[in-house]
Length: 341
Length: 172
Image (cartoon, rainbow over all chains, first blue to last red; front, side, top):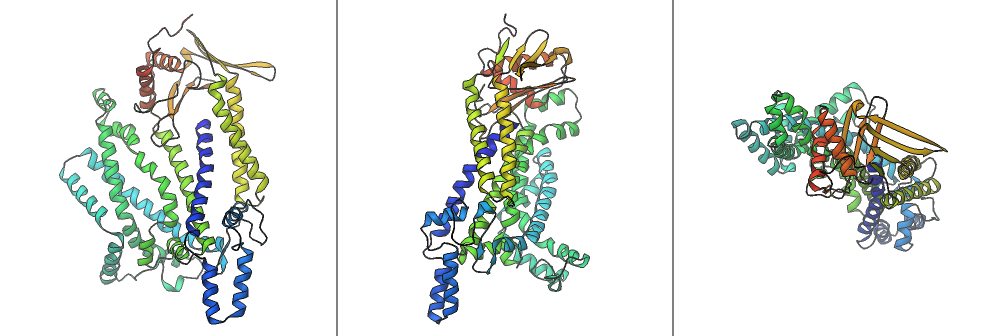
C-alpha cells in the first residue's frame, strides 16, 4: 500500500502543475483583463483617483508583466514586486470585483455550499443504494420496471426546470418561501437553533433538485454492476455451499458492486464546492458556484484562477481517496490487464 | 527456493522515491512555514522517506520458501534480521493487485502472509513471484483457510498466465 500511495501521490504533482498552467492560459485567453476593462470604463468617466488605484493594482499584481512571469508569480515560484506572494505561499490573491482577499470570499460561501452538497450526497446514496440493490436482485419485476422508468425520468429532466416547478408548487402547496437557503432575517446573523431550522427547512427542495439526476444515474450503475456480480461463478459456488442469500449478497457481490459509489467520491468532493451552478443561480442559493460564474464572466483572474485551482486540488485529492478505497475494496487483477510479475 | 529483488526491478521505485523526496524538500524550502502547503510538504517528505527506506530494505531482502514455511531476512546495521512463518502457523494470506491506471493495467501485486507474531509483505517485483504466490495460495487452501474472492482469484490468474505455475514448488 505504501508503494501504491507513493506512486499515486507522485502522479498528483505533475497533474496539478499542468492543470495550473491550463487554468492560467484559459483565464488569460480572452483579450484584456478585469483591470484594463475597468480602466477603460473609468477613463470614459474621467475618474482620476480610481484610475490611479487601478494602475497601482496593475503593478501590485504584476499584470503589466509578460504572461509567463505572471504565471510563475501566481504560482509563487517567482519573486514579485508587490505584496502578492503566490499560491504556493498560501496567498490566493485579491478579487478585483469584490475588492476583498480571495480566501475570505471563498471561505464565506464554503460552509453553506458544503452543507448543501453534503446533504445532496447523503440523499443520493440513501435513495440509490436500496433501490439499486432491489432492482438488481428482483430483475424484470414490476418494482424493477417502475424504478427503471423513474430513473430514466430523473436522468432526462433538466435540473433547472425541476427547480422552477418545485419552487412554485412548494410555495403554493406548502407555503415554503421561494429561493435562498434561509429566511431573510437570518442571512447575516450568528448561528442559532432557529437559523439551523431555517436552513434545514430550505434544504429539501435544492437537495431533491440537485440530487435527482445523480440518484437516477447511480441506481442504473449500481443495478448493472450488481447484476454482473450476481452472475459470476463465485456467487453460484457460495449458493451451492448453502450460504444464506442475504449474507452472500452483503458479503461479496454488493462489496464488489460498490465501485461506482466509491469512484464517485472523486467527483463528489469538487462538486460539493462548485456543483449545480445553474440550479444555484435559479434558486438564488448563496453557494460558491454562482460566485465562480461571476468571476469567470468579469475576468476576475485571481478569484477565478484560485477557485479553479482549489477545485482541481479537491478533484485530485478526491480521486486519490477513491482510488485508495477502490484498491482496498477490489484488489483483483483484470484478465485484460497485464501485471508486472 | 530463494527469491530476491533485483536492482533493475527496484530502480523505478528508487527513482520515484528520489523525485518525491526532492519535491517535498523543495516545498519545505520554498513555501511559507505558516502555509498549508508546508504541512503538505512535510507529509510528502515522510511518505516518500518511508518509501525510499522500504525500497532500500527490499533491495537487500532475501525470501526463502521451503517445506517448513516462508522466511525473509535482511541485513540491518551489521546484524541480520529475519522473520519466519511456518506453514502450520499461517493465519491469513492476501494476494492484492494494485494499479495507478484507470483501466487497472500495468499494475503490480502484493502477497501478505500473516502469522501469529509477524506479517510478511512481498511485492511482485521479487524474482519468481508467480511461483511463490500460487504455491502459498495452494498451501493455504489445502489447510482449509478461507480466502477472500480477490486472493482466491488473483493466483488463478497468475497460474493461467504463468509458465512456471505448474512446476515443482520447492526445486532443489
